[in-house]
Length: 111
Image (cartoon, rainbow, N blue to C red):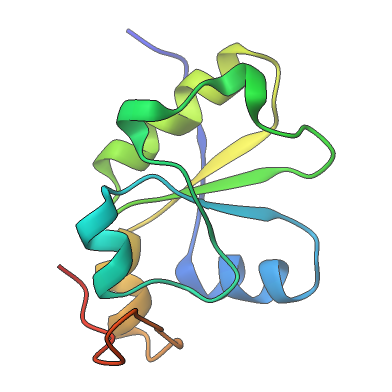
């Protein structure tokens, strides 16, 4: 069993990312990232995430589609001594909250 990780809402993650208070780390796969993401996010797919390469200057908010993979990422980051939280509901909740989504195609759909 892994230690509990802090949770943060999409609205709070957005506010804090815009303010430069957190690093928004999107851990979805490339096709999901291309289809729709937060403009402030940095992309490193969970399958390629090496916690030792994540900058530790800012707390990290891990993001995925619905919150499961980002939970795993946040746990891995916390285990490496990085302050991290999981964004509840993932990008699905972000989009449902009306927060901005950008994409490579311009459609901005969360897949």
